[in-house]
Length: 367
Image (cartoon, rainbow, N blue to C red):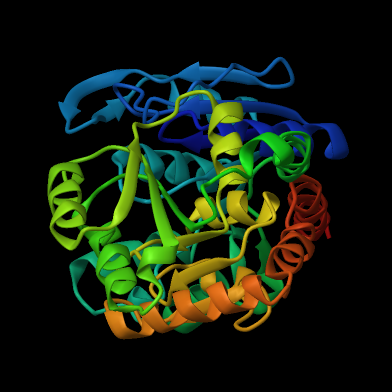
């Protein structure tokens, strides 16, 4: 069976995911990248030897895509099943046209959506999106939020939706965390809160600082921010003005070094006001960390069990975030091992789970 995945660009988690899918399902997979320039957020991504990878070129530049692409008809005839990772380029619509013309199978791949965007508004964009999504034969959609979105807005049948289990290398992060536990758990006795990711306005990293400042335990808390972006200067200035114990580390390209940073922390906070998923939570839970996540993050429904492995709070609510920080602080100080609960949750959200779910999807398509 020949399967083609059409997507924007390379990503380390995607490579690992599809390697496991290939191994378990014994498929011939080709991945086609449609971005004109491959932006990987400075990730170090290795090419796989388990599937083929191609960068499609075309005619007439349109942002970071082409308006038209070469050889799409030939590619469709050469493959049996197509995974389409989005609807925001002409390539996806052209592929879908030929897929339907030649009676191939189309699968919509959805990585998540912010809960605040659960309800679609009407209009031309929704109309085009609806035309695209409703033509799919199956859906490889990540988490409960994606399933809810597809059913609510496009009347997709539940039995056509298969959980993607988009994730990270849980076992590898776990091994690095355990191996480096003694040398990394040194943070001058303070409770260390970690933020890892891009420093952008919608990530609302300053909410962490303001929330810590509201607590009565701020002198017992350190904040480690790993990442870079347009908000870096304003975050640094706020931290200085509030007199917080805060340190910064630029974006870490080598993932093993990033995972060592997780081992230094006591808790990870993701305060985004609009986040389709938040793979940083998968990483944190694989590193045995409690997590605090805003309710605008797609992962909150599946990976956060309030009071067990952390808390979900109303996005933009500094007071709720502050209260959650104190609750996790007290739980950890009292020996409540929220990190162990995190690892139990993420241990059921691995690449192998994604591959098994994909196997069920293929069986459904063949029935």
